[in-house]
Length: 109
Image 1 (cartoon, rainbow, N blue to C red):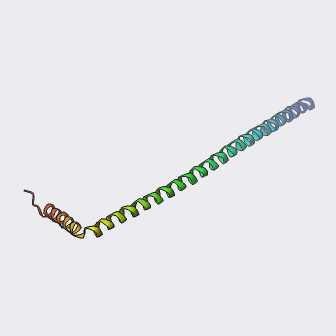
Image 2: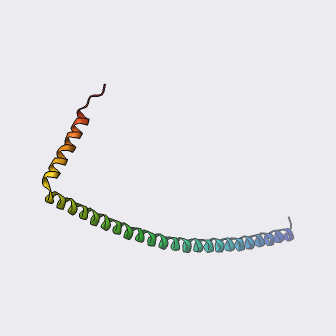
């Protein structure tokens, strides 16, 4: 191999290295851009999910408060009815206990 061939091979290798470096830089830039896009999308998604979770927590608290208020109101109504007519309550409770006892004590077959 003569000097001219070696020089041409070296020039070709330099061109390939420069092209590879250019492709590497281009690929690195493309990946960086895509990473930034993904990061911004996920950031927007994260804030949306935080807002929805906060809204759901507030709604659950409202439902809890409403249920507690309704249960308290119902308990107060029952208490008032028992105090207004206690013998009626005792009789209905005894009748319900008798019915449960009959169903439990019944023998099939």
